[in-house]
Length: 181
Image 1 (cartoon, one colour):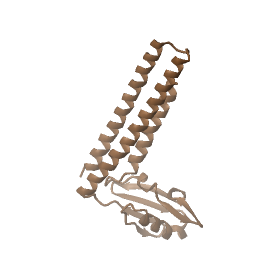
Image 2 (cartoon, helix red, strand yellow; image 1 turned 135 degrees about the horizontal axis):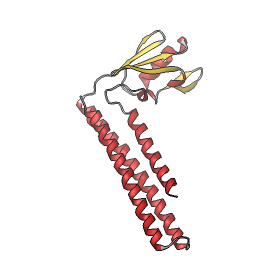
Image 3 (cartoon, one colour; image 1 turned 90 degrees about the vertical axis):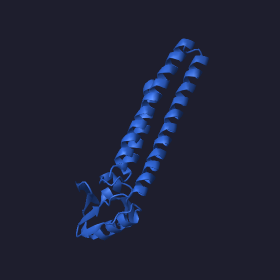
Image 4 (cartoon, one colour; image 1 turned 135 degrees about the vertical axis):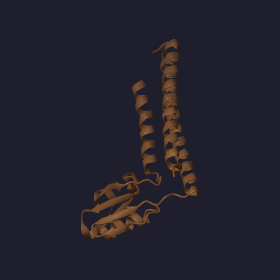
């Protein structure tokens, strides 16, 4: 049971890290273009299924389109994704410069990061509640003693505290990255 709770909590932290990777910080990251969907051959597909995305410089994302006829669609998809990016097309290569963030946008992004972190904290606490409920049920059914239930409860609480600390550390790092000029 303990490994199940740990896995569920760790997967919540992993989701947070993916969410953070998609937040624009003024520094280029291929994860920034993850939400971009391209209208390719009559259906919407993720950008990484029609092009190779790379980061040649700290403030530049390079998108190498595999099929030359898709270049315009990829350019349009990046513009329409609501990321505030302005790609420059050069045949099959599309360069996406990452503009520096202004102070207001930085503060807004730290609030968004905080919201993501709080959602993950709540998810971790929900996993803890499920674990505690299971322990109470096991004790009620006579499968574990009251002392064992108390010991396992302490373990679950310690695991929860460790995971919340990991979330807070990840948030601190991300806020520092966002506020860095």
